Length: 94
Image (cartoon, rainbow, N blue to C red; front, side, top):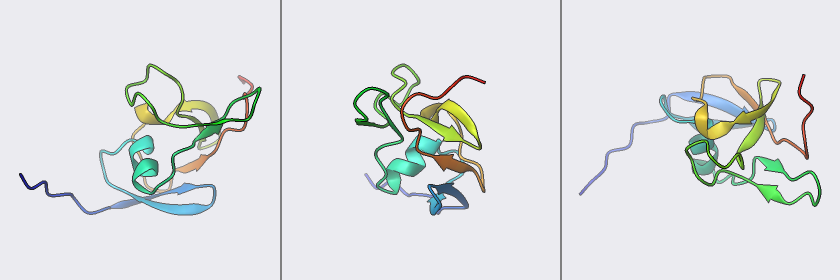
């Protein structure tokens, strides 16, 4: 069975790098498609973490999105111009 992929039609930014994405993709999907597997580090050991369950249950895909900490990237649709940064350790709740 052949699957036809739609072309990328928007751009998000991760750590200053332009990442192409498609309408309807989550941020996690766009990052994984670009080869970016880690969206945060753990507070104690600094170990990298990234999307795992892709349904919002595990919280491993947390990142800073448009200046907001603790965003589950698997649950947020990519938008053109969105800014995503790796979340280092724990983030304070504002």
